[in-house]
Length: 124
Image 1 (cartoon, helix red, strand yellow):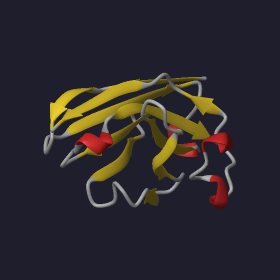
Image 2 (cartoon, one colour):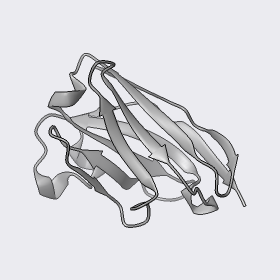
Image 3 (cartoon, rainbow, N blue to C red):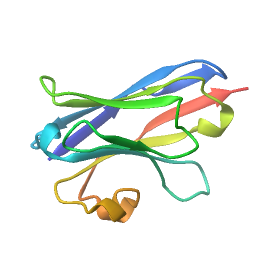
Image 4 (cartoon, one colour):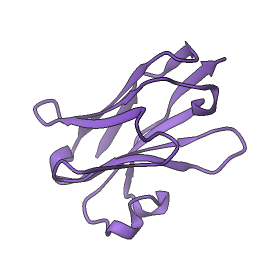
């Protein structure tokens, strides 16, 4: 199983970025797919998750600005990030799990598979 995250970069506050997580060895549509982020010196925190259907949940800090989506044909999950602020600066990770219970979706420990991180830096 491999999750390949990409799309990070350095942008200005107010800009947008789209992160991608290309999955191999798993069928993204059959897994709960999620994005987490970790800033230096901080714990890894939940950003968004997309369930096997079309339902998604978001951290309060990104709700209304970020959108998680899936392209089943490409077996890829995206995180569209709009109106970025310096507080969004972090390394972003994608994760996947086949059998998470709802209460564990926001918890990093619940995910079996992780991609490498992609760095997002937002300058104010």
